[in-house]
Length: 214
Image (cartoon, rainbow, N blue to C red; front, side):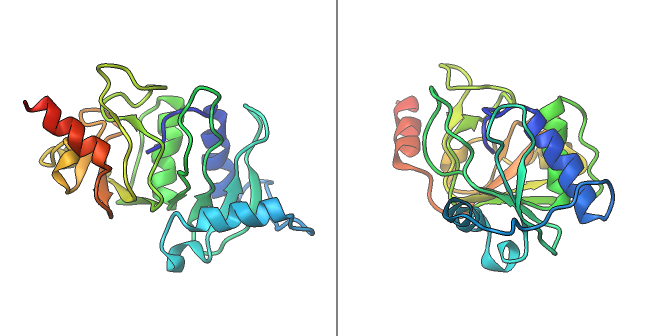
């Protein structure tokens, strides 16, 4: 999952506005702009890379706000309940790279709770895709903004994420991402979720693990 480099209002708008529009509630109406710019086309194409084609082809696509605190912008209205976003804007002192994401309606509840530091109320299994990987996040601190010597900063390969109504059901999974299989991010917190890699961990991660064992 991405680190919280964007204002929390982004996910508040994402959770309340987008889901309200998908369910026919609220006043927010998301329609494709009459003229789709080349930049918007590129962002939509990138956002759709976050999930399998049968998911992203009919997903709503939201763009990041132009300025911190502004609402997200709808680039396309979807029909399948999924929402995809292009890579998050790079912070001046943050890592660069791709991190588009596609989430189902239930996983968006986890993101909204995380953004407001409230308790998630999931009613079923929640799923999200990041098939281009991410820019890095602490594996232990949900609100870490950058790497420190102690916060176990992880740059994840392509993966999907699974959250459960009761995060304690994930306790049997390891937290070590270097084993090659699923691991739990933010274990012991109300935002714990399972990271399921679809590609090998970066060599830098496995090398760091070997060094720590010497």
